[in-house]
Length: 257
Ligand SMILES: [Zn+2]
Image (tube, rainbow, N blue to C red; front, top):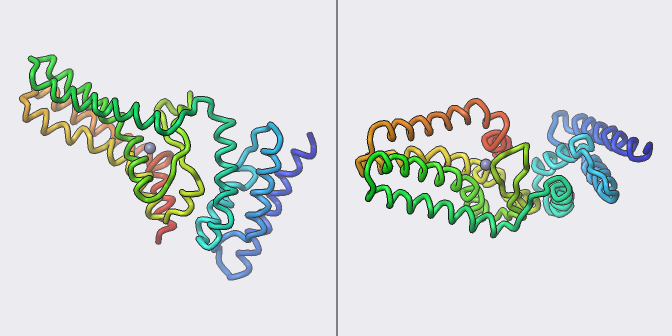
């Protein structure tokens, strides 16, 4: 369909001009002209009015979102439209989406199960004690990640709309943010909401380690916990700083300055 093909291209052209204008206007790149934001959002909405799946990046949607973040005075005007577009695309793309409450309940059960195992470990013999401690650490590690995002997000006023699995792209479940409340939070609040999951996961092995020592777990189990902690930190340094939670943390922190 030619119409559908030309519209995103035209939106991109309009967006380019908007960028140029704002650059020429005050001599430096401070943001994108409101006309360009408007054009990008309208293009996304037009695409969504059909059954299709718009490519938000090509339509300039994420550049428009970045522009709104740089100009907080525009947040009220655009937050709801941005959130609606973001959510509609999410609902069309991700099939395994569940209520947030279900995710919180299941993760809480997993977390308390892990804590309970730590208690159980004190009354069983070697090597079952060590195995149970490691399984418990794994359960706490996996479950605290998403819960930490939700806890800090809720604390700073960021809402979540779904608990989802985006298979096969990411094996672990995630919580979908409501983009309107996300935009209304400050960049620093958004940054720490992203960091919370990563920080929680990184801390768990190092918190379980002294406990394992205290209950007399054998050295190999302590070393296994240490290895888990170190591997996770290495993974963050090599991967997450470029692609995941820490990338988003840095993106938002740049706006906070
Ligand atoms: Zn995360």
